[in-house]
Length: 293
Image (cartoon, rainbow, N blue to C red; front, top):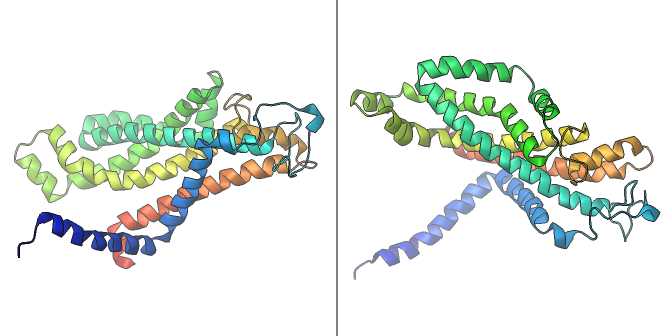
């Protein structure tokens, strides 16, 4: 009786499923963080269907109503529904977090690879990165937003510039460590071009820590966006974001604390989910932690 490739594939499926299940049981933070983040993403995608009313609809007669069956999270000083505005605010925060994570990962990877493999580029670019890292990311973002007009795109650009140095320095450190390993030295000794060494040997080894860093960057970007909006230097007031909702309710916190409570809770839950996912990925990817577990 001959064993066909199809039969081998069918027999391997249960083993793969068992390996995945054991991996998830070993790292429950990945499951918890992934589920929480998935729920937030679904709420953002289906916000037009989950929201009870238009988040921009004004109803002065309904102003400052406490949570009820009609308005689940209450209303603000203009009578706008806090629940609908909070659900739509998930779109802004997740868009900022994902966009900043992708842009900083791409830019930081390029800068880190070049500076880690080229000494003259390291001497030039890393001094610029060190200068940016000496200033808190929030202050850099506030300064950049003060020079431009308030918009979602400018917020993403400002946070990206503030976060790139950390990612580039991480990649640079990984590249500097990989340069001293025997397989890279052998590639250099054999006359392999520098771009091929970077692409074939160094880049794949930088992706695991870069993936973990991207999750933390997304969480940091969401917090910075909320801070900028809370200070009035972020997204325009007509865009419902969690930071905008909280800054509108801070002057009424003693009489209507729910205006700050619900968007703040959603922001905290989303950042917690991303951090749990990042911790789980770090534990799963780091071989030293995997052996210890």
